[in-house]
Image (cartoon, rainbow, N blue to C red; front, side):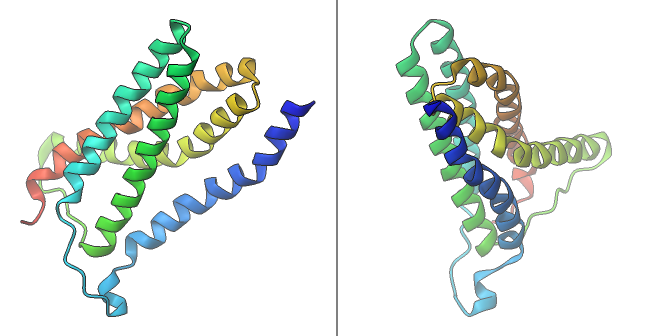
Length: 180
């Protein structure tokens, strides 16, 4: 009974954050601090940092799965909390970058242009979808509903891993076109 109350307690937060985060990112993506008279130097140094954080997140996710398969629940828990922390750090840096710097257009052509936009679009759409999945998966672990946690984690893990890895790929593909 108590486990259900833990899940119920967080359900509103899951729904709220699953809507609020993508909407806030979309809005803040268009907002530039200079539009409000706040003169801030463009944070052009952030993309390689947040791409690295995406790479670290991917490693943490794989390590966490290996840890739980080996029965090390404590390590799994710590790695997952760190992966969530990395995702939050990425989000803050991503928003800060786009609030201070104009967007960079992909300059490549040919087949690579289509590959880039396919990866980018799938990355964006799945990054939105993964928010409630991560939150639900985490809350089920908090509630000690490990049967339900494991079931949804099998869906969450590959999507989150894809988002983390494609974040690095998108960065590597667009990096040559960043303004210096």
